[in-house]
Amino acid sequence: MAKVTGIGGVFLRARNPVRLAGWYREHLGVPMSEHGAVTFHWEAAETTTFALFAQDTDYFGEPGQRAMLNLRVDDLPTLLRELRERGVEVLPQTEDSEFGRFGWVVDPEGNRVELWEPAPGM
Image (cartoon, rainbow, N blue to C red; front, side, top):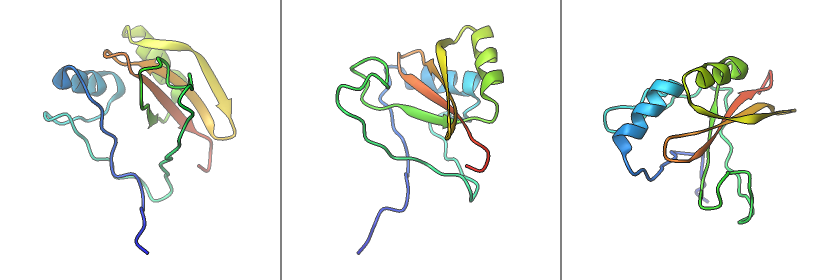
């Protein structure tokens, strides 16, 4: 039987795709193209998670947000500090778990974005 082998992409609707791509490029270092896309080539040991949440979850932030990006980062505390200094909306809570460290920001269109520094060995 044929099967899914991984996540091929994450796609967001945007009121202003050019502006939003610029924000991701400037503040999170995502090398978005002029067309608002980037392809990541993961290291062999890295993973991507696909998970389903209950309809009434508050984990994504606002109830109207139907999806949430989770972006792998290399130094969460430093990145969160730098983002605050640049005026990015950084949510005050962080979380440490066996999976690593998590923090959240809100992009200019109101999307909650999860930043994840994986635990060693993940």
